[in-house]
Amino acid sequence: MNLKNKTAVVTGAARGQGLAEAKLLAEKGASVIICDVLEAEGREAANTLVSGGLDIRFARLDVALEDDWDRVADLVREQSDSLEILVNNAGIINRSSIADTSLEAWSRLMSINVTGAFLGIKKLAPLLGLRGGAVVNISSNSAFSAHYDPGYTASKWALRGLTRAAAMEFAGQKIRVNAVCPGLVLTDLNAEAPHLKPMIEMTPLKRAASVDEIAYLVAYLVSDEASFVTGEDFVIDGGFTAGAAYRRVSEEAGLQRDRDH
Image 1 (cartoon, helix red, strand yellow):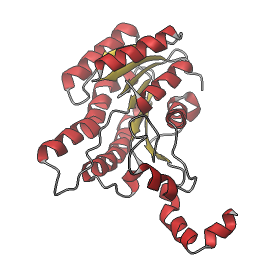
Image 2 (cartoon, rainbow, N blue to C red; image 1 turned 90 degrees about the vertical axis):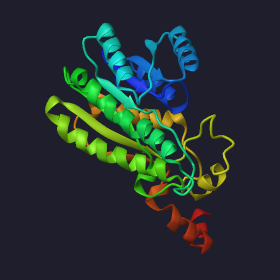
Image 3 (cartoon, rainbow, N blue to C red; image 1 turned 180 degrees about the vertical axis):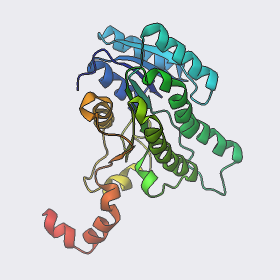
Image 4 (cartoon, rainbow, N blue to C red; image 1 turned 120 degrees about the horizontal axis):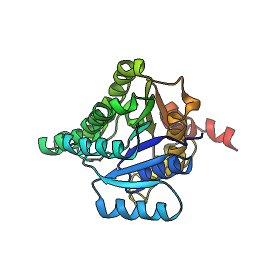
């Protein structure tokens, strides 16, 4: 997965999964712009990676604001004559029921998780289309079932639809668009979360993913090796979506336990 001579924009990349994605793309040779509203953390991360010899720069970006995307597009034009990679990673979680979710909270979540990806594709497609490129939208395995967070769940389902619509619209410009749908990913932000242990117990592989495992899938999808892949959803969740509930039933019935031992 050689990404030399490619320019990439990664949103929500000041820390966690987004930072891991940006770092790997740079290690594979890309020139990467990491974008986030967390300006201090983003600049520190960029400076650290630059000191390690990687081609990284930081740009402040609120993905819900059209003017901010225009500024990122201008920055890309200053740095390069084209853009080859866009990773729409930015997203937030609300963790409240429908009854307890205010319209303001719902609208804010949608503006970041869905509108942010829409604006990214809309604003950067002219640059991606100059030489052909790839977009990866970070969805979730909850886009195949449900999460106890209706706003988050709805936004991740919406990203699957946006991915497929964009893949069809921009295929003539040789822009590929795919969605990565992670399950439980272990980060510093959720290491103490109450749902971590039961999620791991339900996951057939009995662990969470690392941020690097998600990053490698993203790197593949934006590489030339994936040149015939577009409009698809890639679930990476240790088998959770494939049949976590049925596996739990088998375990409690003693059937799976016999096979595991």
